[in-house]
Amino acid sequence: MRWLILIFGLEFPAILAFLDCLNREPSDFPEGSGDRRAWLPWLGVAFVLVPVLIGYGIVLGYYWSVVKRNAPRTS
Image (cartoon, rainbow, N blue to C red; front, side, top):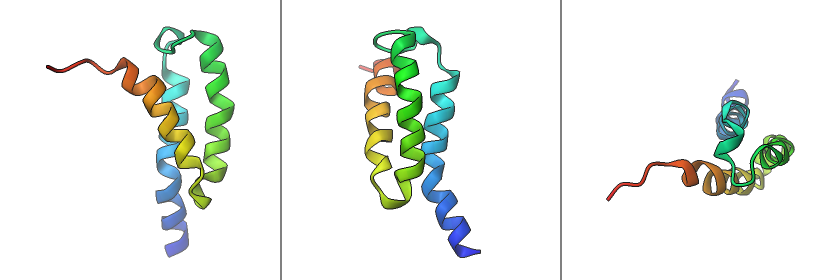
C-alpha cells in the first residue's frame, strides 16, 4: 500500500500539468493551438517517466514556458 501512495504522489504533478494543458485556451500558449498539441504528447511522456525522475524536467519546462508566462506580474 505504501508503494501505491508513493507512486501516486510522484505522478500527481504530471497529472495536474496534463489536465492544465487540456483546459487551457490555445491563446495561452506562445504559438497557439499548434504549441498546445505539441505539449500534450510530451506531458504524456512525462507521466510515464516521472517515477525515474526524468519526467519532472518536462513538467518544469511546461511550467516555465506556459504557466509562468501567463501568470500576472506583481510589482
